[in-house]
Length: 233
Image 1 (tube, one colour):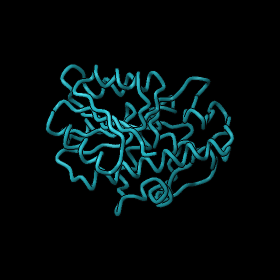
Image 2: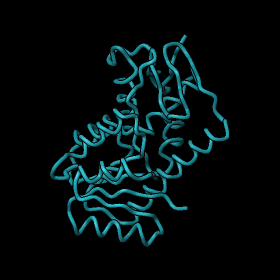
Image 3: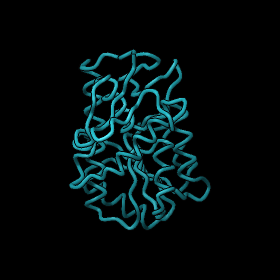
Image 4: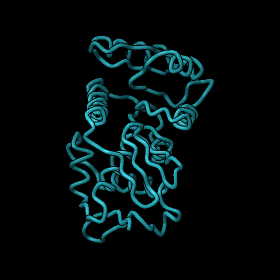
């Protein structure tokens, strides 16, 4: 069965256009023209992925992301926004979105991003169901694969799905240097020319969550000229 996608977009034409694209690809679709309507659908229905505009009139998309992540709702979120500023993108990722597309966009790009995100989520769920991963406790950190949550001193970190994947990978390879090329090929394999700047942004976001002083990291270290390493005694 195809995933069920929520399209939260207040512009009627664009919302219906996206819905038409998804239905043609045999996705199940629910749509919302406001933030309040989107939250009601999320409460009442099983949604596998959210396409979220940042300006919904009654609420901002960032408010919705923040609310869902505080509720430990890990439903993947792709932001679709006309805001192209890097600050808007970084803020959305910081709050917990999984991907960000700027308007206008090609339908092929939208569908490719949905497929990529769905494939990654399904892999994690399959791995969890088959008990490929056992939960890891290392120093102050615990990786809970079932809920896709990392805890520090029993307090959950606010990580989107990709940040969870990256941190879990680091912890699984504690005290080992991971090169930038390894990280880019593993977590951005869908991009023809993944940017080191994208990787740097995600490392920054991880440090903001896991380090007491992100400017002077204790755990996630930069190995100059080599890559990165999590060092947890």
